[in-house]
Length: 200
Image (tube, rainbow, N blue to C red; front, top):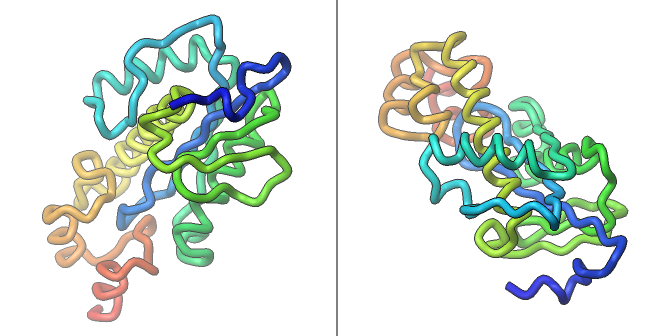
């Protein structure tokens, strides 16, 4: 993709890539990352986090954090997802990630078809996590962070297998939900969880 249309090669333009993970799961937060890459330091193998193995993602996460000019995470908790809806919670997580950057960007490129309402010059790019290296980096950082959060939740709620499915609605997860009911990190506004709560 030709990013020059956004003026990123102009001196003084500081571009952040933003992506979120965790829109689809039945449990856990939605997490976003914002990354400003250093144009002088290349990172090989950046692509959509879903196309990488967990081991490769972790390796790249470390390299991104080491080489990027700035990296930040933002998230929206389950209560916010249930109160706002998942789209608005995702946009909120993105906003929090960008606001947490130690360097404030002059341009923000977001994966998807819409950006949060903010004062930054911003463009939403469909499939951006496969087209823009900074967005790919953000998707990797967000995925590694969220996966670790879900592994931590597994210690608290081992009966659901969060360390295996990361809160997504797999058969294993749905069976555990039927058997044990919903826990504190389940999204009560999501249909499979709502059905279990009604049946209780």
